[in-house]
Structure formats: structure tokens, C-alpha cells
Amino acid sequence: MRNKRLLIIFGILLSLTLLIALSSAVFSIKMVNAYCYNSDDKELMTRVQQFEDRLVGKSIFSLDEQSLIEEVEKEIGGIKVINIERLFPNRVSINYVKLYDYFEVRYENNYYISGIDGRILKKQEESQGSEVIKIKLNLSEVPEVGGNFSSSDRFSALQDMIEMLEKLNYRETNAPALIESIDLTSSETAIYVQTRLGVLIKILQDDNAGEKLRKALSLYTAKPEYRTSGMIIVVNSSEIFYSQESDNTNEESNL
Image 1 (cartoon, one colour):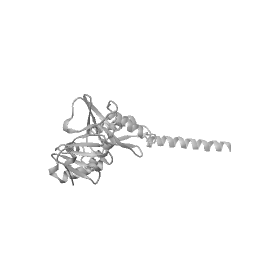
Image 2 (tube, rainbow, N blue to C red; image 1 turned 120 degrees about the vertical axis):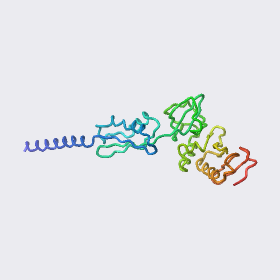
Image 3 (cartoon, rainbow, N blue to C red; image 1 turned 60 degrees about the vertical axis):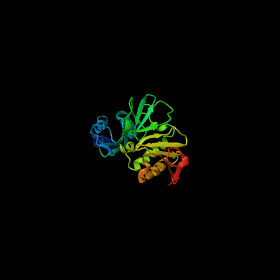
Image 4 (tube, rainbow, N blue to C red; image 1 turned 180 degrees about the horizontal axis):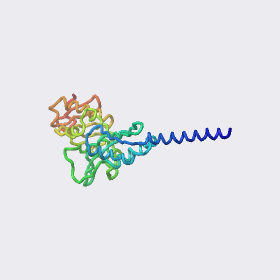
């Protein structure tokens, strides 16, 4: 009877050992893919895929997705990882987007370039000119590469406007081609958006800044005669004015 019990216990342990060994073989990561949603940059994709060297052989179940995301973004730079996809039994896909140079913020004698999410991608001594939108922000500390402008005063209003530009399909090079600069420092109650063609857009108050910008651009698109001079003033989502004189509210005409 005792021997029978020992044989049963031994059989169970042997089965568990075989199961663990089999699982280890089947569910060990053998391949890592990289997929970019908005670019076919082969060099960048190769750099992301090099993380395969660190993951092959590890259990797909023990993969720490958040740590891997942080590691990839820190080492590669210029990308935002959307998610880490486990493709059972033994493959992993790192899905990401390329962060294009979108904003330029001048601080002292340097220019800090950031992607659409406000993360600072690089620091340089010369401006990128018309390739990016010039942003004026009140900064509470010296910017650092790898840091984020999102902690800056009024950045949420800026982000709201940029998200609206994305929805309107003003992406990557299109937005800088339309907008020269966005000033959030000249007034505490207004945001000034300077267009490339000349007309200045004045958005009163920070609330619903994206929707107010959409209204201004609707008028900009509908009225070619308002594009090269003067000022489009947005009070709220239903009140929009045009002034021939920039920042002269006495000569506004309600549209």
C-alpha cells in the first residue's frame, strides 16, 4: 500500500516536471517582431527589433510589459510604444509610433525639439525653422532631453489644440506648414496662433482650446480673404470675429 502511494506521488512529480519542461520549451520567446503604425523607417525598426536578443529564451508568461516599454522608449528615443503584444505560444510584437519633430521651444540659447506628446527628443543650438511649430511656454525648469513639456504651465491647452489638428488631419509636416507659432506667454487670458500666411488667431481663455482652434480654421478655410492679414478672434465655440487690425477689438465685425 505504501509503495503504491509512493509510486503515485512519484508519477505526479514526474508529470509536473515534464509539464514544466514542456511549457518552458513551448512558451519560451523565440521571436520578437517590431511594427510601426506611422512610418516605414527600416533603420528604426531594426533598432527596436534588436531587443529580441534580450528576450529570446525567456518565458512569455513572465514578460514585464511596462518595464519593457520604458526600456525601449528610453534607449531608442523618438518613439512611443503603443503596446507589447504576446503572440502565443512564443512570439512577441513591439508596436510603436515614430515621434516626428513637432514643436520647438527656445530656452536661453538652445532649441528643444519635442514630439506631439511633449516629450523632448533633442536639444540643438540652431532652430529648425519652418519644419516645426515654434512654441512659447513659461517653463518652470531647464528642459532636458528625455523630459517632457507637459509639466509646463498651460501645456494642456496646447495639447488640446494639437490633438484637434491631428483630428483635422494636419499631421507631421502639414501642421508646421500651416502654423508658424503658438504663444502661451504674452497673455494669461489668450493664446496667439500665428499662421504662415499671415493672419493671427487669438483664442480667448484656455478652455476648449482645441474646439476654438477648429472654429478659427473653419473660417480660415472658408474665407481666403482673411488668411493673409488681420486677426481671427475666437471668444467661445459659437462666437468668432475677424478684425482687419491685429489685436484691435474696436474694429471687429461679427461673423
